[in-house]
Amino acid sequence: FSNGWKETFMSGEQEPWVFRGGLTADLQRLIPVDSGNDLFVYKAPEVPNSKIYTIRPYLPSDEEAVYTVCNQINNCTTSSAVADSYLSVRLIGGFLTLSPELCMIVEDENGIAGYTVATLNVKSYNQKMAISWIPELRMKYPLDNSISELPQNVQDAIQYFHSFIPDVSEQLCRQHPSKLICGILSSVTDQSICKRLVTCVLAALRANGSFGVHTTMLATDKESHEFYGKLGFVDLNPAHEEYSGIKTMCRSF
Image (cartoon, rainbow, N blue to C red; front, side, top):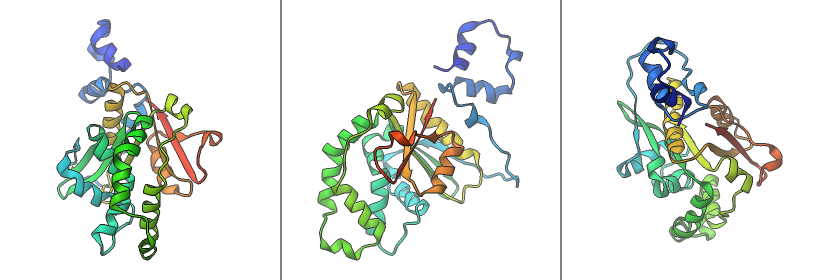
């Protein structure tokens, strides 16, 4: 557990006034994340508002709404709901199905506005994907000549299902075994929300024995690179990248 937890409950030497920050700081010290101080630094909103956001665990009944949010974040909205489902299933479907206990969502008055999905160990997660999830998707989304009429991102998703490789870098598994994906709608203007959301998931991963997490993106995706950079992720050494065109970012906690 974090040093803050130990100081609060185990040392018995500190007086209450030694710790600054009031009740909020006391609660933050209970979160089992050692290197998470950067996630507790929030910029005050430029325009005051009374909007309330609720962060809670993912429920099976949230699946369709989370897929919809994923499509909106990735600008994949067409007239066909079936076509839209390809991308969201590719990006987060495995997490929602195989490790729902490590998935969190954020809601506002209009419904789900963001999510963070994660898995404790990406190596075992990929093995489960190859055995139980990918075969089902290959049957549901066959690779045939008809896909040439679909949008390019849908074609890429189907190609991914049929060319899935479960192998993961051993060094990545040792140092940053967990994997995480975070997505927030642009309508959420409070910059602290994504930090709070990720903190909840990192705490869950830490409580289950993980000390490092990573995420992947296209090397050309500058927006995602900047987004995760603000969440404390740093680039993996390019020499350790396994696939060209893919960038990996990591953080320890």
